[in-house]
Length: 246
Image 1 (cartoon, rainbow, N blue to C red):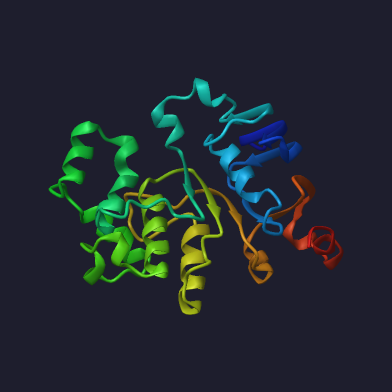
Image 2 (cartoon, rainbow, N blue to C red):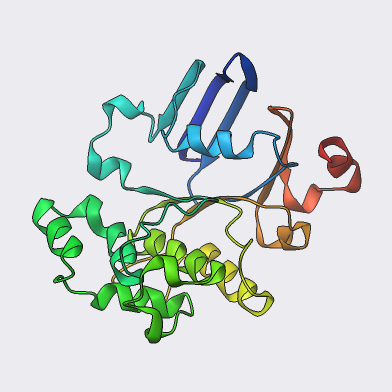
């Protein structure tokens, strides 16, 4: 029996009287690897923002583990993590401090203060930075001094260190060098990594434009003008589906 972990029920979203999403229904089951396709402006980022509770729908209901976000405590919410397209890193903190921010959900204010003062342990952060192919020479560098690709991998390491069950990612491969895309993609989609203390997310939804990656996903969702045009197994995807959304 399928275990639904995330659900959108008849969701619509308006921004400044513009209808961004229109009556969207979606179920995401535990263990699914889902690719979200659509042109820029189609509603992908808004969909992700609704799924993770960053914004509230104008109409409809969002459920995480069959509960509304208002019913969830901080620990339950931390079982889902997001890699944002704009990364949302803290420019004046170092790379290792930013990665450590992924642990804030399971730690107290004292940990947050130690991280801010740069006196906490970075052992686990360094492990995940290594997984993301980040060299130790940039560990203590401020984010503003890093390249776009390095910032992208810091954001990915920050999400993975959280040890969440669900990962939402908005164009996570955009700034990566071509040789790094495949290992990072595999890292996001594999259920285990070499560090026994944490597992990579079991359930993933990734917004992307790379149709050459679709064989790595179980399902493909196509969105256009705020509406879902198809939600199918990746093996059933044909050119006619892509023509509907591009």
